[in-house]
Length: 99
Image (cartoon, rainbow, N blue to C red):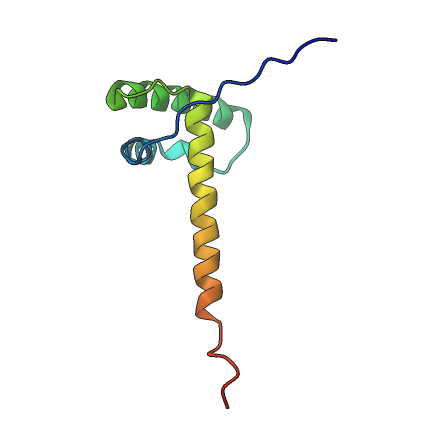
């Protein structure tokens, strides 16, 4: 029976790191592109490499891999969508059962 190595957990992103990541990603428009052909994927991978280089050179706190930055960006997008959906739901609620 082989032993599974426990995955090392990275440190949490600070607010400063999140701001840096979002500002860097805004410079790369092709990351947000929804097309899925070969050239688009190639461009996206190159863009993520550049994002990782720019992030690691500007943050200076903790080294973050391309995979970790991409996962954090997807997590940020997911949380924003949840908040927007919740806000949209709250706007359509009624005042209650009062006559």
